[in-house]
Every structure is written in structure tokens, then in C-alpha cells.
Image (cartoon, rainbow, N blue to C red):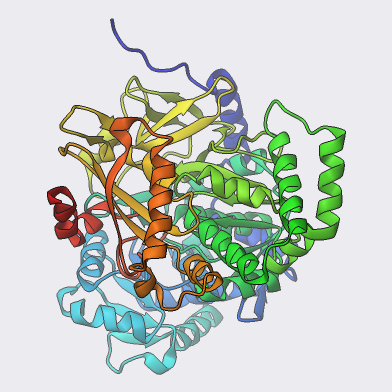
Length: 613
């Protein structure tokens, strides 16, 4: 019997919505949107960094100066500018300045190794680069000789700018631009752009091979903004930007959407400062990747452990959790549940949210990977609803999501307005919509494999749909483990269960062409320190990773996860590593996804030892 794909979610309604969105953005570019926002909201705050704020009027003027500077340096239409910078105001100005000059900005992760920098820069044929300062220069200098097409390297930190014709400080770029702009306007360059002009070239994380450059056009970004406006409030808001601009979600929420809406973004370039920035900004909307939420949960748990969690706090969190869970799709809270939450919120929960800087949030979001349901439930206990969403760079961001009036914890929501979604016979998620990329830069074969003849984009992700159309993620198609017993296992499902225990920071299971699964684990640093202190244990994370009491707790966590799994999915052996994985050390992407090939290579001997034992 022939297997069939699932029914299409969206269908005719999505087609009608798509027509409305396309009509609303017809003929426009991001440059048009910035001009409109600067004209109508010139005095409103746009971007804040280290307490210094620029308005939308100042933003556009500075963007035009940067554009004029690039033009004076010889930038031609479609010249690529590589941006190796953190989340900061200059990043936005360099990005939009390149666009207004007719160029194409491409942000690369600021933690790339030298050979990775060389690969991406050569692949896109970049003519210019903008770097933060000395740390980035140290990464770039060893490969500059092999990048003859790179004409100028602009350094934001003037003190770090080396001598020589190839280098230019940010201050000097602005000076050149101001002189050029005083002599002649730069308008003809950005006015020559069309909705189909490339807005940015965004490289994939390269978790399974070399990164691929995804082409994002002006039309795609504006369409995605229109979809997001229809799915949730589009009012001007205050937000915090800490996820790197290599993530399409950051570009949408902290660059393109603010340009259209005139909202206010506070930058946090150092994750260690995120709690302080949140308390200062008190955002209306906060987005994080699952690892952000897991770390924030760990901080709260550690604080409660140090202060001795009282029965009052525990009872209040139970009331918060019950209230949020009772508001899920198809349900409504009883009067008693609502009243108990209101009392708990007034006496305890509001204060806890204020300590996090989340007392003004209208809603919070998680994207990049499935959010473990236990993390959702923990924050529900604080009276916070985390809306899990699902998307990909190739679709300019989200294609499915929960929203404040229609959500289910543990799912990534339903297809967004204007998006069609279905499951292939093998469970692969396939989507269709106007925000789809025209392709991968210089890779026609890979582009042809991405989209089929009926315009369905093959995501490579596996999922399940419930009767109400809510999507749950299972894992990556290419990551499926097939044991020697012929069992197919989605590793993410097992890993998420392991990570539900607060002591476990990251988990990666192995077992392809092996008889059973084994796991490599890392500890959640903040939680394990507080957990150990509460039990009178001394030592740093590396020492605690070997302590018998910690290992006994991890053993219990693995047993609890195994109890919820089929026999063939259970982890038979495991090891705790002495240090956590980070994007800087190379095991994680900028959005917190584990780079499986990297960990496989790093821990090959340890994995072999577990199977040999």
C-alpha cells in the first residue's frame, strides 16, 4: 500500500492570507521601511548599547553615512561585506549601511576559527569585512594573505586597528562617509533596489558539513514581518538582543522588525551581562534559545537552593503552573485556579519575575531547537508563558508557533498565517510559503534538493501533528540512529528527557550501527555548584563531575529518563565530562545546537571505551 503525506495544514486559507500579505508589502524594501520609520518616529529610541541610545532619526542618518563611506571605498552593487561582530549598534549600522550602498551584508559567528573564516569569506567572495576589535583581528590576520579579493578590513575599535592600506577604523569610515554625503546624496543606490534584491546572505550553522549561504531578499523579510504581525502584536516594544545576528530569528526580531515597527532594542554582547541588561531594559518581549532558558532556570533554581526554598514559594509556583497549563488550547482555568494564581502572583511570583527583569513581558519565546517541556513547566510556575516556535533560515524564520491565545506546552504550535505545512510519509516536515529562499548561494544542486516540483520545502526535521494541528518535533532526519537491531531512534527525544534533570546541562547519545545507546553528559555549572554547596561539597565543576554524590544523582537522572523510554531507546552507559560545551569551544552553534560531528570526533575514545566496557 502506498504511503501518503499528511493532510495539508493551512490550505486555501493560507493562500488567501499570502495574497493579503503580498499586497501589503508590494514594491517595498527594508530601505523604504527605514525611511518611513525615521520620518514618522525620528525621536523614538531605536538601539541602546551600554546605556547609550540612538533614535530612529539618528539611526537612518548614520546608516546613510556608512553607505556613503562604502560607496567612496568603491563598493559596487552586490559586493559582499562580512560582519564579524557581536550584538551592538555598529553591527546594525554596518549591516544597513552596506544594504543602502547596494551591497550584501553577511554576518559570520564571531567565534569562527581561522579556517572557517577563510571558507566563508572565499565562498561569498567578500570584498569588505567589518570586525569588532583585537579578538577578531587575531582570528583574521592569519588568513588575510589567502583572501586577495578582500579590499578593506574595517575595525570598530580604533585602538586595535593595525596600520596599512588594507585596514580602516570605523571612525574613519564614518568621516569618509560624512564627506561624501555632504557632496552628494546616496539615495540613488538604495532606490535602485527591488523587493527581490538580496538583503543578506546568511550562512547555516554547518552542523553536518560546510556552511551554506542562504539568500534572503527584501521581500522575504518584509513578508515574514507581516506574518509575525498577524500572529502576535506588532506594537512598538522594548526588547533585548543577545542571540547572535547569525541567527535568522535575531535578524528578524532585532533588525528588520524594529525597522518596520520603530521598536526599541537593548543590546547584550556579553552573555554574562544578560541578567543585568534584562533588569535594566525590562523588555516587553524576550526571546531565547532553549539553552538560554535552561541556564536561566538553573540560575533561579540555584538561588532558591541557596536561600532555602520555602513552602510559600513552592506553593506559589504550583499555582502558577496550574494556571498556565489550564490556559492551553481547548481548556480554560476554573475560577478557583485563576483566583489562586492571582493571589500567588501578587504575593510571590511578580517579585520573582521582577528579579529576572521579566516583570513587563507580554510574552516570551523560544526557538532554535525544541524546548524541553519541563523547562516550560518551570517558567509556567513563575507565571511566565514561553511560546515555543519552529522555523528555519531557508524560510526567513518561523513557520509554526504557539501564541498567547492558542498554545500547547511541549509543542511548537500551529502553522503561522500564510504558511502551508504537511508531514511526509516518513514524518519529515514540509512547508510552503512566500518567505522561502530562492536558494543557496552558488549551490544549484543543493537548492534543487531543498524544494520539490510542487514548491514544498523539505526541512529535514521530523515531527508529528496532533488532532488540533499542533506540531511537535521529533528530531533531525539525518540524525536518526539505526542500531544493529534495526531500531530507528531519534536522539533528541532521548536527550531532552536526560536534560530534564537540573544537574544535566547537555546530553548527546550515540548508537548508530551499535547494539545500544550510550551518552556523553555535561553538568549545568550554576546548578551543580549550588546543589553541591547545599550538601557541603567543595570543588569546582571539574572536580564535582567526578564526585560520587554527583554521579549518583546523575545515575538517578538517567534511570528516570530510561523509565520513560522503550527498552531499545534506553541509555546503557554514560559518562560526565569535566567541562561544559559552548559555542566558543566549538561544540555548540550560536543558537545552542550541539554540533554532533564535533562531539563525535572529540569523544571518540570515550565512546569506544563505553562500548568496550
